[in-house]
Image (tube, rainbow, N blue to C red; front, side, top):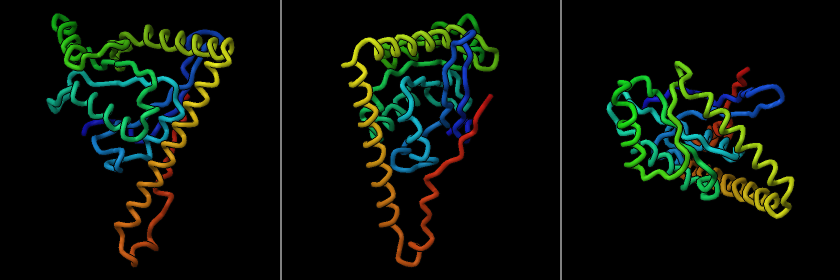
Length: 208
């Protein structure tokens, strides 16, 4: 499973003067993460603090894997971890478009969208060159501001958002506790003394 981010990174994205938002770069997840595979739910739990999910997918994986399959696998892990989290707005961000020949780029990206039957927002970017990142950042900023305005102007909307956060927190706690119990049950009595709940803590790096 190729991915490069090893620890969560939190950074502030400055759009322009007095306009910024915090973004959490969560490590790549693998199939089975909700059951503890790979880096497991130690990273999934950080997603419950987010409002908008940007699903970055490599449009040209070096191992020849299917970008659409990668999207479906992670969507499935989100649903298993927290149905409320999975229902959060999610945008598809097709990354590394510079790895595809320019004359083939549009058709290649559209084929991924069509295979997924994706109906939400789609952005095409190159994180390396910066291509397409400005429109993405601006769109995220607009979305955040619109959400904030709705919460300020509509008490019912604000309460619905607060209720969603509470549900996500509860679902995350239940999933983490269930996984801990399963791990404990799998150990024999001699190994129980070696179990460390700190295994579920994770370092977070703060990016400038």
